[in-house]
Image (cartoon, rainbow, N blue to C red; front, top):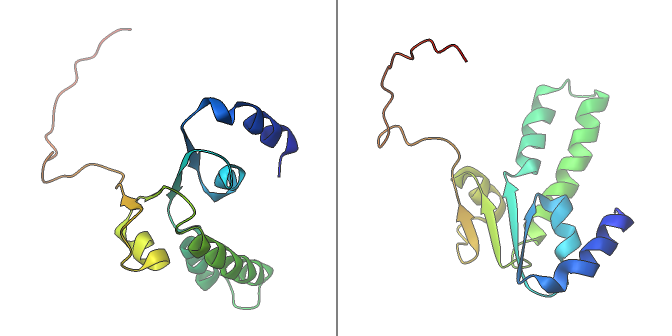
Length: 130
């Protein structure tokens, strides 16, 4: 952990009602602190690690490292459930992978554009000399 960051957080956190942490490594700093805490996980990093280790040669250093880290990270990612006021992920796949059908403090907020509501239309952009 970064002691300088943690000291600064401890100094200012009482001035705020809520923290928004991006990814679990930052979220660790807000645990056991006063106020509401939102963890924006983006995705299940452990799921990405499991995909990477499948692609790497079986006995390669990369495969071994990702296997160890994937198991540790999966355990930790599952443990964060209930420790934050809200957890945000970008896909239902990641949510189900980590938390199954739990819904009480998990928000799936997809990235991208809904092409049914906003279909692609070709447009001509005039050349502007900026």
